[in-house]
Length: 209
Image 1 (tube, rainbow, N blue to C red):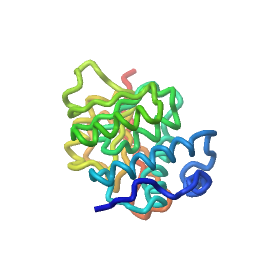
Image 2: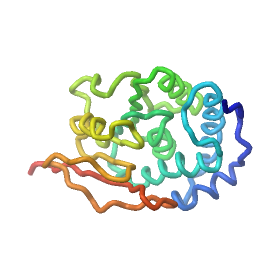
Image 3: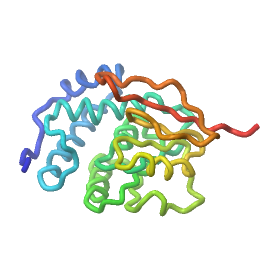
Image 4: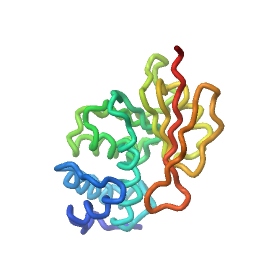
C-alpha cells in the first residue's frame, strides 16, 4: 500500500511542470494545487484515487491535462458538469482556474465523492457542487454549458449520459470519441502536451437558427 501522505514537490516545481499545459500560471494557483496534491496523497494512502504515485507525474498527467482542457473552455461558459469526476479531474483544476464557473462534480462512488467534498472544503471553492449519484439521476431540467469526460470507465455509456446534459459542448480528454449524434460536430482534435495518443476533443452542439 502507498503510505506517503504529503508530496515533497514545491510550488515553483509545480509551476515549471505545468508550463507546457498552462504557460501563464495565475497568482495563487500553484499554492491551491499544492494543497490539492497533499490532500490527494493523504487520501490515496487508504483509498485508491489514482494509480499514479509520482508527484511530478500527478502534476503533469492530472493537473496539467485538466488545466489544458480549462484553457479551451470558452469565457461565455457559466456552468460545467464533470461526469465521472473520480478524484476531481478535470473538474476541480478547471474550477481553480475559472472560479466564476459553477462546476458540478458527478461521482457515484461514495469514497471518491467523500474525497471530492473534502477537497472542495479544503480548497475553499464556493462555486462547486458534488453530485454523489450517477449523472443520469440529475433532474431532467438541469443542463450545463459544457460536460467534461476524462478517463471514465465505459466511455460510450458515459458519453450517452453526457449528451442530454450538454446544452452547448462536450469536452473529452481521450484517445478517440464515441459515435456522435447528428446534432454534434467535432472540432479538429488537439494533441495533449507530452502525449502521443491522448487528445482534447471538443464536440459542439448545433444551435437551431
